[in-house]
Image (cartoon, rainbow, N blue to C red):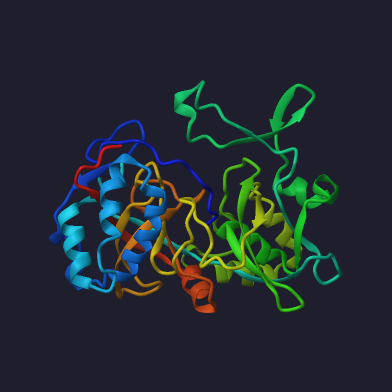
Length: 366
């Protein structure tokens, strides 16, 4: 999903306060497969999280002590987690404990730094006239509202929609970061929020989320279901792409039903992975996108789900390092698979039931 940065909200781990966070105290024995899970990959990912978390009082001590743990010792990591953290099961507002786990990936597109008849779809950087409206100081309850707009005289009006941007290239002329050859791949790049573009000379350019135009995300998969174009059980990224190839005359209109538009920035070539909402590189198979109103951003999360399109258990310790415009609610997660063709295939078909436990420092206060 698009990596839309959002500040985590304050909460007591066991109470449902204004930020809607619902966490119920649990025991380690409740985590399916906990004793058999290899913790080292997620531990190394959590150490990356500490680069951001160590500035927060609730995390300072555990992050400082975590750096002293021998990263090659499975037992040392397990002992540290069980001694310094407590598990809390994530529950939904209606009291249920089961939700949805989807997947996302880092797309690989073919592109150029110059327009041509082959590379004719622009990836835009943030427009100069895009305004970010911050109201949290005046309206405390508005700190999760991501307002974007533009000036018209003395008024701030909504920014251009996807349709307006795509149908009038002059609106953002000069802000083209790169050009790519496939409009559907560009659309899914915006949903994923980061990607890699291979240029004609073989150079790979890494790009990441910079900003958005202020409109809510609308699922084109759901639109196809509502129209009777695809059955619900069949909808996936792959089936949507196939529908687009079979219905080229309808494709543009469908994509523009999602008014949300994402702007990008070029990232350093040596980054290990795309930058998530926490501000650290994501780790394939260990980074998770969550709703920060339900799960504290940066915390370890134990995910219990199944492998895409199977009933095979997938129980794994992960780290909440990202957010997404479609990732809303209690038990709701987006699994980052990486950037390989296999990652794309797994992400595109992942739509599994899941349960989640967040691990918080025993002295957690936020």
